[in-house]
Each structure stands twice: as structure tokens, then as C-alpha cells.
Length: 314
Image (cartoon, rainbow, N blue to C red; front, side):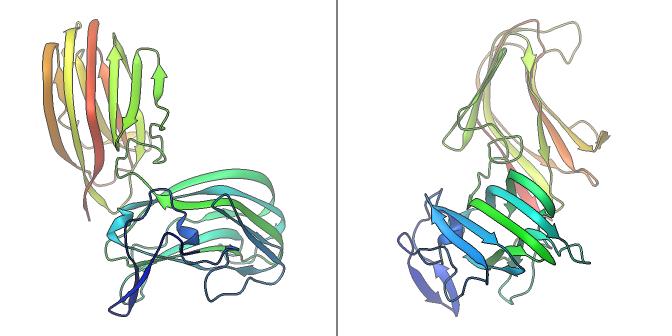
């Protein structure tokens, strides 16, 4: 299915030429009109189809289909995998990977695994259809992704429906990144947030706050926060921290890791101020609490063009 793509041979590696539409399903970039990967045959007792640009794979016995995605700058740094899956009497094998799953692996120019084994989407036994959504960072040096809907169990069946693999925003505050703000925005009490052009605009009228729980990946070394901030008549409360601010705190489970990071904060009335800072991720941190807030007794705070992204990898 090559309507939006053009193949170009370069240095022995097959690359995608041209700009990639943000919601193009990467499963289908090198597949025929029925969704079968180019040069491959569908496994025995399988059903493969494409509907409304999404891939459906049903496997009634052991087998798999391997799809290839060539990593180019057009893809950015993150990919989003979503769909639905179910299993019927799927008996797993002795090994942990012998079940129903979507396996992924990134390869470098030497055709070797890079970035470790990404966490697979998996199922066994009998399971009613359930949705899944997962975002993967593209490791440094990766030139190719192999993604494989599979039945590695001993018996039974597995079905994957509405499979979609697309680019994901670099801005960690935006969906489909975990706990990110959806395109429709958020309105909750005094808090409002709305994505625009890959960035996030927020406003808090009166006292209020919202905490975003952001999972961290071991390969991340530092994060970068960029935004503009202004306040209108924010009256400081009865403690020094009761003002308008962005709080950040790194965690491992329920335990805080490292000191409080330096924060942006204001009180009173202030015009737009450009804010930018790099935050080193402390050793052992597995999550970040990101908290825009107005802890003052009155007034409003507004954040524009906010972006939180991975700045450096380990």
C-alpha cells in the first residue's frame, strides 16, 4: 500500500522519501492492499484485512506477521501503537514470550538490536476484547523497526483489531503520551488546558492546580521545559510557596528522588515572560509529577506555548 510513499535505495538501505503524514498508519507503509507485508505470505489459518486505514490480524494457530518501518527524520522521536485485542483459550508455552503479543525491536545499521527489547503488548488465556495504547521512544542509531503481531502460544487464538502505528508528539504533556492532554483539551474547575500546534496552553482562574504523572524511560538523561508565563493579580498566601508556579518532582514509586528542582514562580501582575530550563533526571527516578498551579488566594495564571520534551539521552 504505497500511495503516500516512494521507495528510494540509498547505501543499500531502503528509505522513505518525502514527508510523512502525521496519522499515516506505518503498519501499511510496506504492505499490500489486504494488509499483508510485502514479500510475505499470511500464516495458515489467519485473517488479515484493512478497514478505514487500520490493520486487523486474526491468528487461529501459531504464527506471526512481521512488518517493517524504516526510521527517518520524518518520524521524530516517538511512535504510538494502539488497537484492540482479544484471545480465546490461548495456551501459552514454557517461555514468557510464548503467548499472544505484538513484539517490537529496533535495529541499527548492523542489523543488531538497539535500545533493548521494548515492552510488548501481550495476552493469553481467554480475554474479552480490550483496547491498548502505548508510546515508544525511537532509540539512537535505529534505522529500522520490526513490529510483529504474533501467536506464539501452543493452542487457541488471538485477534488484533484496529491496529494503528503513528508518530507521537515530542511534547510529553500531550496525548497520546501517557496522561497527556487530549486534542479536545481539559476543563476541570478553575483549570483549563488546550493543545495548539504541538504545544499546550493553560489557564488557572483562582486557586487551583493539576498534576500530570509522566513516566520516565531509562534512556532519558534530561528534560527541557519551554513556555511563556504571565499572572494577573495573584495574591500570595500565608506561606512562601503559595503563589503561581510550575512544580516538578521526580519519583520512584511513592518515594521522591533528588532535591526539589528549580521552579518558575510568580505573584502579583506580570506580563508574558519567556521561560526555559533543562532538568537533569536523577538516578533511580521512574516518574515525574508536573504541576501547574495557582496556590495564591486570588488572581489568575496563564501558560502559553508550553512544551516538555526529552533533551538528552544517556
